[in-house]
Image (cartoon, rainbow, N blue to C red):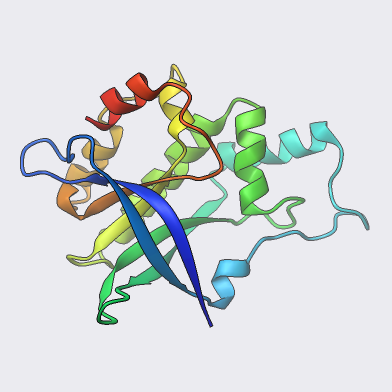
Length: 193
């Protein structure tokens, strides 16, 4: 089964800076559906899914503090010739049981003002695990544009990890998440450049 997803991606690639300046690509990504994609962890806790905001916040804090996230890599295949272009790094929750799925986790992280912490863990783990497995293929990293508004945002953090794990910046594609609007376009452009 195949699902075609349309998404905007910002290429992070250049011989000197690690970024194509102001380059936004409308990419068509073909996602091969496999069991790990639907691992949402929406298990019942005490007979009902979490609805208490404080319990949700506590679980989210636990996920972040204990780094209860692991990456999976979804193949991205060319529609033109079927060639494997790269992998999209996706995050999964390793906290069991958990009262929310991955999409809800990012929504709650924004609501409880810990989106940067969550994205930082996800990105660091995705890069660390990818270093030995992607070869010279592209690695697509999801990014919520609102993390650039966070005072804890560290410019150059991704580039530092790319150097540490010996991954070429030319193989990284930032995929701007569709769940959030870019609120500060100037700040976003400065961070990308």
